[in-house]
Image (cartoon, rainbow, N blue to C red; front, side, top):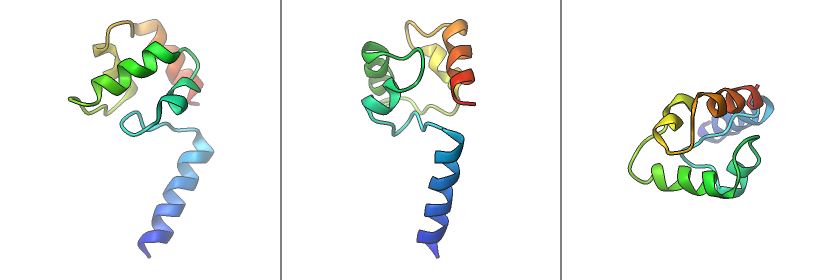
Amino acid sequence: MKNVLFILFMLVAFLFGAVDFNSATKEELMDIKGIGEKKAEAIIEYRKTNKINSVEDLEAIKGFGPGLIEKIKNSNK
């Protein structure tokens, strides 16, 4: 039963294009519009000591301002 729920959850996440910033690989992060190699590395470094609960949490990382946050939100729709 747990496997079925997990597969269902993953399918829904895939369909909506949601990215889990806490577990995404560097390559998955770089697939998001506005995030290149350096920003992906910054997210990975940040999440070693911080949990990312929402896109807005990325503003705590140097180089992530309101404009980029909005771009990321729009690319995940």
